[in-house]
Amino acid sequence: MKAATTAFEVLDALGLAQLLKRSGDLSGSVPLRVAQACTPLFEGNAFGFQITLRQTVRLRRTSDGMDVQIAAPYFEALTAAHRAVVPRLVAQGILRADGLLSTVFADSFVRVESRDRLRLWTGLCVRPDAGVWLRVSATANRRNRFIDVEEHQIVDGGTFEPLILDVKLCPDAPDLVRLEGEVGTVAPVAPGFRIDEVPLAEAPEIGIAHTTFFDNSYFEGKKAGPTRKYRKIKPPPEALETDAQACCRVIAVGPEAHTITGSLPRVVLSNSVPFEACYDGYTLTVEPDWQALRAGARAVERAFAEALGPTFLGDNRRAMVPLTRYFTHHPPGEPHFFILPWAFVQTPPGWSCLLEGVHGHGFDILRGVVATDVFYATPAVFHVHRSGHPIRLGAGEPLLQVIPIPRRLLRAGFRQIALRG
Image 1 (cartoon, rainbow, N blue to C red):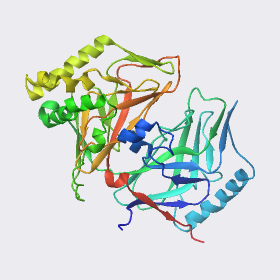
Image 2 (image 1 turned 120 degrees about the horizontal axis):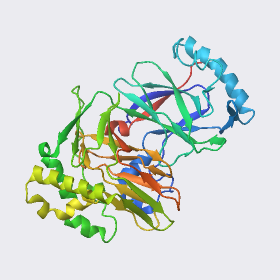
Image 3 (image 1 turned 180 degrees about the vertical axis):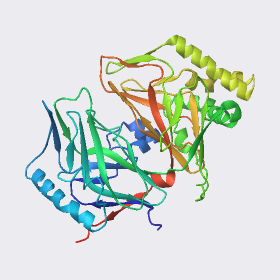
Image 4 (image 1 turned 90 degrees about the horizontal axis):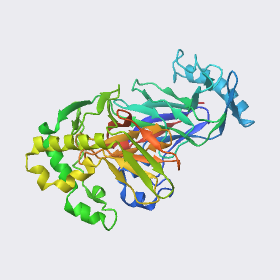
């Protein structure tokens, strides 16, 4: 049997947290339809490794800051262990003497920045393999909605780095917040690729692939339930390891609503149609700006006609519907709907894309993973988690960060390293 690939090393120096791998069905808690048919969401649930606390940390706002509490005797034991282990890590050459643990975290594994912010050393040290970065971020799809974790990357410098979480309390958080269980995600990613922008006219095969997927058989199959068509797509053979720079493409097919940014490149897709949506426990209604929606739909149709010829729309009218309607509803009783942004993303063979959704007032856009070497749409799936009060999103507000990642890293594990005696 071939050994599992690993991409980084982990050293647990404190015992406060551990890295755990989720199941795609979140231990059976996702709807059956998701487990059976929605592969992107299933893989998004399982993405990376969840930074999971072994002890509950209570954060209590005070008049002049924040009080951090862990039940006795764990707080005292962790504090004493921290003060003993940091010099040991430095003495053994695992961490730098001028690093964060020796300076910012010299006395404690937690540093309060304000009433709403703190920095927490998880007690873990990580070292990515050569050519690998580690992306540290919030958890998603199942999360504490009162906190956020600021994203950062740990680069491949050949040395261990402390795994630190920059935690921010959300504006509507109560004065007492519990950090418990899964509090963040760490995942191996690949730097050194570029993302090009091209019009559909220069990538007509992407438009053809869209209409091939959304053909008449797709819509006829939907009448009986999920088609599972995406799951049946066979990705091309994995790309051979190479030193050549990987090139990804974003293909706009409507009003431009994306940017390319980040030291770890990503496409940020923004909302094109202002709307509000309300869930009453059974029905989820979406009220868009109809003028903006109609204008955008016409622009999408023009892009396809210019790229694929004047008869294309008449021959493929049904396949255009998922794009031109922009919003797609889920079955009654589900607090979900999704937006299909007016842009496609294409990656080289063997690469997928992480779809990292934003969190808003009353909703989350869920994390997903799409094999963008064979399927180029990047749906933004909304989970509305309040009833009776509408959620709103204006034009230009972000929906998704789309980050290309080699599938070999999506499957990779880590090596656990013991602290020397």
